[in-house]
Length: 72
Image 1 (cartoon, rainbow, N blue to C red):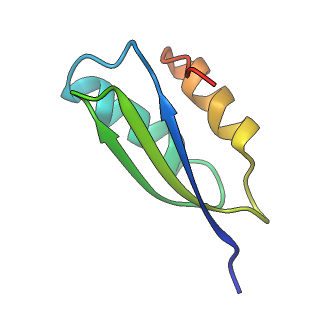
Image 2 (cartoon, helix red, strand yellow):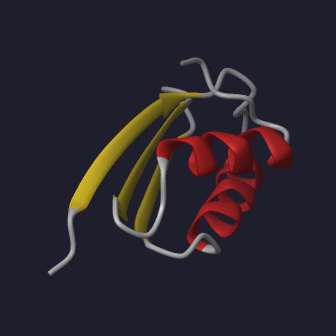
């Protein structure tokens, strides 16, 4: 059974739907990530993932690599 965890990060560099699309693509490529929601106006990213397959550090690293460093 999956150990679903929700992680919320603020990423101040989110400015448009293109950003949201890029973030969603980068995060859903991580094994164990089941859902990504990006709030452009709130500059917030919510990620649901299986804690046995993915880590918060992997998610943060993917955001940073994509150009949207999260506030921790």
